Length: 451
Length: 123
Ligand code: FES
Image (cartoon, rainbow over all chains, first blue to last red; front, side, top):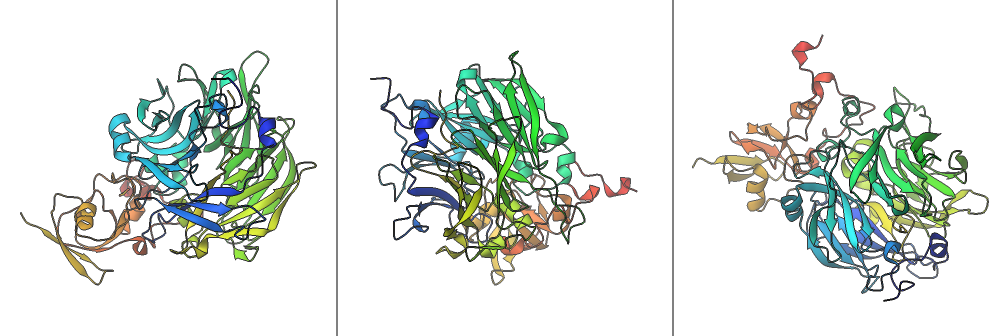
């Protein structure tokens, strides 16, 4: 087999940016926690502006069970096996964080009507690996690893589930969890032999809802872990302290030679930047600090709660969502030590800055985002996690979530909500549902890693 | 074997007879009651219901804080009935389960059992 141009994905980030525009979006929608006794489902959304069904859900794939809480998902293959002609970006791995079931969805055979290919049962995963609560899915060459946030009983720190390319359980990926207290997201950068992982909390802590007092009792994370990727064991821990309360999404530069990466500390509402210095030591610093905002009815100012970050494929812009404030921000990070705010839009949130957008009442705040490969379109959904939604935005039960699109200026920076795109999940056929993570068939800005 | 009578207040007071040694979720699902659930080990709160009358043993649950327990919530996937019980089930019973943690903080005795300060020791 030749070594080039036959497998999935792209030879480089710059080649990925030249890919054709995304025409379909796959987005998770949930009924877990809403009172509607229906399965969670995967929506296919038409994103082709020339199509008569543009900005509509065109198919829905229901999971076989109720109460999975679909959350994050990932592809079976990405640019990390671009050189392998036997691989194809065909299957989405769609985990249920509450049930631990993994749904393997075939999106390749009929991209407009994905079909269930296989289920890896949560009970098997628990029995074979003592792990539960799947979160982030990354492929790794032809293998798949998934961060699992708890042991089979929902206690931290959990570990990493390893599947082969036929979605069979290999076992646990890591050789050791070291002193890691919690798991959440991870990203790897093979040319530096490093993986970085972040910390949410034990499933038994975050699943029932958020008790602020538990942060003080150290039930939530505040550390970042640097792994020896080949040895599959943690090597160094960064204690972020008050600057890094609840570090969630981890993003390395897409450039595989770069050592720079970023994490959003949700509760501190900070962006933490790390890099390897000239002496080969990992360093970190805070580069963005979102201030708390006063609220007429609150005794204390409202924290931003940065629920997600992502980087454009050219590593020039960092996007973040303040789920409680209701804004999405664009920062120019050409100099990763000096983030410059270049754009901001408002939708929903608790500060009442944009309760209605494109004719739809936005319940919740900007939460999961996905950026097109060319960096020009950012798709946004509003639900975070069923129990947390119920605490902060109880009206989401009746209103459902929504999806919007933001046009991003990649020349000079800047953002604008597209007036012609909105998917109102309050109007779904089985009743109001909540939308969460999005992926594109051709890859996106949070899937692809170059080895 | 003695069975307990479980009355579901918000399903027209339907009555089910259940095995005291089995979790209520299992017994009720087996008899066709439509109930939400997720983890099935007492950690995720999805299956919470409100106990209106009677007594259950739910020592194995780790999802509820003490305020939710004082408000009558029970975790059906691990709770076993000790007496006849009346329950309100489903998300309709979850009115007091969720609160904004910034607007309505918990007192030290209202935290989860493993970190709560008992009321007597306070003050
Ligand atoms: S199903 Fe998770 S607590 Fe009962």
